[in-house]
Length: 499
Image (tube, one colour):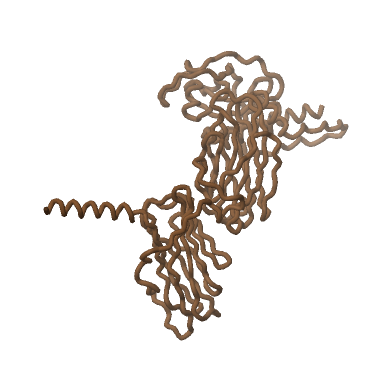
């Protein structure tokens, strides 16, 4: 008999937990009295159970009261027009957690003021809402100042909170028609947009003078660096940059500017729970081809943000770029300034031109002639441990012919032993072509060949921005294949152009 009674109790306890474990409740320790011109700390306890994903806590404050966030538990906080909002892209994992804010009373406020609120969340693809128990704050100059721990206006949680269910999701925070939960969506209050995949999308400014622009710089045959600058002004709160990348490419973030980065399929996203304070923010990512990247490719994108809980968008537009050795060289050549115009000859003596010293690393003395130069091209590599790097893993295909005139290259590293392409792929994630120079006991690794200094300089900067972690890449110079200093090369080039 006792065993049966025990089993019935356990079954009842199980059913009770099954019925009430997922109940959501919210309790706020609102003070009963405040003095005008004072502030108190208010704590809100949220019992969410197993609920996760997007949620919003909104407190409606009457004129005379204001709120400033203290502890948000990962939420973004805004206060405008009497509404204090905590918005979570993803709720904390704990079943119960607390947030807090400073409740301030204006110096000229008075009377008994009502404070209402609600907690909205997503469950089973439906938006549900729990109302907070209404509370009041009495403002009186005769009332004593509140202590550090104000007495709650109510001592017990709501026994049966009102929970409403609606089929639309995110209807509060989207200017577009509300849609059910999409498994491909990231759960943010800014729904993903349908970005066209065709080129020719023109950049458009969004409401609030928000705009964005993109720059794509080819790095090698299989990789490009993408930089996006968002001009947001004083905009705060949620923000999401969604980039539609070409099929067959992977995106790797290099600069996030406090954003959460994610990439899936042909979509790359930078999400801010609360946008940085600065007017302009900049993000960058590497586009790496999973196979051959040669050819034309297009990137499209939009920046989404919230204005008064409505989703707005600034179109970044489309950027078409070309990958391939010839295309990279051509694009860098276009970006370089035109050659110096010839200087008319004069019978009078002219002073020796002064060449400005740049920030590049320049060798102070003229080294001995280069003994040999070999070009290492891309070839299939058998995976080995990162600490194993031999020249045999790379295919040495050609010995470069004699170079004529002034040329420039980019030295990416130097060592006392010769390594192959596998070393650069494993250590620097660099799969481009490079050449090897033996000079004064050093083995120097250089890339490219340019007839203008600025073109080589731009390639050097692309390596820096690409986060390859080369030990200080710098521009090198040559005269008929003989290595000289950059100053000497620029002087000779200028003299030749003046003849």
